[in-house]
Image (tube, rainbow, N blue to C red; front, side):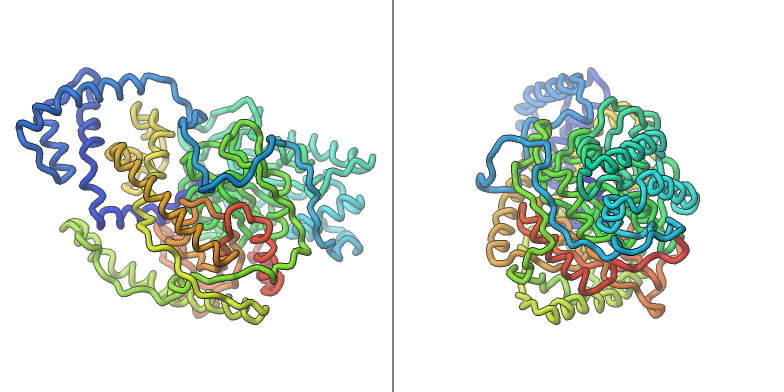
Length: 621
């Protein structure tokens, strides 16, 4: 839901948009923007000429005369709609459904009825260390067994994680607000309930952190953005309520890049525990950084276009982006109503499944959520799944060529960035060996990998839908000038992106949605042949495509770069999610069919157990 939208992802698809002539359809938006600067101004021939120039089209004098009356009527309608009080929590009158045919039915049931089936770890039978910090990197299942058997108390576990959050926040900058009083009260209640035999399940007594776009009553919900530092929302988000019911203990509200972009927020920049000179990527910046550094038992993030995937890759965590419409977003900041997803960031895939068991399903408020089943069973036979790999995405980097139909200014910028692109290709070529090693490991696991190709659609151009929705979600910032309160003000940042989005006409917005339907049909055909697709995490194509179609993804650690890895840039500008460098983690991504998330997680867990990379810890934490 995030971004979910990383700076690098946005730069890639905006560049492609320009190259395929998308700007030639901006006439309507350009015209309304020109006339909308002054409340009583009307559209005249000069404005039509300027807008036509921006759109690259010609309009004759006779045509202009015929257009003026209708255009001014349209402008008055736009001004009238702007007077309606639309808060960020007000959704459009339409809903995105990733399913092209009705599949699920049933009454909304916000209470979880299913029981997760997991493998009990050996740690439950061992002695609890005298220094509880030795449990900081234990996974949820291990901690839950210790809590259930009362070998460790929820109070002690909570105090340990709070102490680590306080100690490492000055280095990693991942905390917006500690929820210490709330956590202490929840921990005492958890210990009382467990002692009385009222054990609620795997998350009972587990401390966790929430990305600070989730509303928590009596605490600020800042969205990571300047101008919202003191915002409070008087009701807990649906996911927070469900985790409360499961007995989980909220210890902190964690950072996100401002309005779910990147890792820079009003308090600074969240850092990667594997290399504190780098940002943690975003926008679920604090969730990934805190989970990776053993400062929470698990965290909740969000993704719109990369906001779980990117920081999970950068920080070496297990990230899970559920099928769109599986987890209710009630009480979460809206960025793009048809693309926002909430999901867990954890130390293991099984942890992600256990968290999902507590948070999925309809809540009666977020009407995009389907009554689809989710039942985690760690014993599921993943060998029955058909597995493909996106062959072209594993190919060597393509030859460096300037964008087609580029303007003189774009060509100048392209030439100036040649050295940066060359360095990025060198890093990508180095990282490719880890992607190919993942395919070899899967074959050694006995998997017959099928070669598949992702549908050939202009996914980066279709993803303009995201920026149009985001600009609508935060329209008040643009119209009032409050966008100048946001920390980042560059060409690729939200304030400028919101302004540019106003030049996206309604007709072309609908055409992009129609193209999205064709893409969904093509992905449906692909997933009729396979159940799981393996893809490189650094592929912007698979990332953009599956966020548009709503398919689930699991991001799994896939090794640590060696000392021979190309050095990262001296400064992490945030423009490249894969800056790498010696001693930093990589990941591989597994994609699944819609609402088949439990099977996808079982497969990803099998790979994780075979590879063992999830046991790796960042040095110094």
